Length: 413
Ligand SMILES: *Cc1c(COP(=O)(O)O)cnc(C)c1O
Image (tube, rainbow, N blue to C red; front, side, top):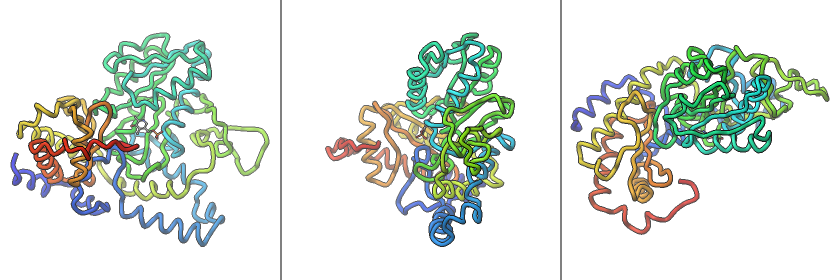
């Protein structure tokens, strides 16, 4: 691969026009969209309108006038096609952590009649997912929730007739390894268990087929590949086959079948609205609503194809420049088995990351010694990959990453 080949890839890129939809600072190569998606220009405009016109001028009447009250469902319906879900099964609310708590406890009480208590996840799942299961075990005690963590490659075999719920993340946040959700779901169902899938690193980066795979429940966040902004609310998916069979534990007024009757007795909504708890964060939810317009008429197969070529190009260039002795790839070699990120192990991963940020290449570090590069097909170009690897080569060859100033740890990595 040389620069001409890379420029040819860009000129034939069917997604090239999307880059202009984003505000990305000059001289910045942003390879961290797997952690915080870049800012879509239309989001800036929407947030201005929501604060100045709606909140500022129309005040409380906006709940009706601008339909604020239906935003969680409206946004849910926009997310649905991105994750392969038909209508009425997705709602936007809270964070992944809180939503996992709702789903996992609902799943356990749904399975309660069969006296199953085992919740299985993988040891290297995203920590919050594990913490939620651990917390629930403490709350319910082990007779009702026994949390078991296994190695990722043991997940499939660990499902048996004692399993209540298997809780997995499709794409591993650290390694970028992608699991086979279809097989895991089939196995779970063969044994009468339920599956909860975390789509944090899938939604918006690749096609997801929740309905086709008959996944029971899912969660995901909107601030990574969906570009909803820092702390944008997450989403919940519940398969319609489970409609009416689940009861989520945070029985808040927005999940009531008629919140504005102010009934002293909780009556859950019969549909996906039950998974709401309190008042939605309108400004943030409006931001994600605007960001999702970019996914109208967007073919996620095309997004995935570009993602695969971006990661392949990056890794090929690392090899071509002989950098793979230093940067040892943690992500799988097979593109089929990975998401839209590449992770490498390097003793000075933190320092390397800081030195790259100093040169405008934004990646991130994950303890204990990994550097992650996320590829967002809507705004990353092939030239970005080329330029990033040039900088990596330079930083590694010069040894500049060993400079003391790059070793200063910050609160967020
Ligand atoms: C980013 C991420 C989260 C974040 O959870 P929040 O509660 O929304 O902060 C959870 N799980 C996975 C797998 C993630 O990658």
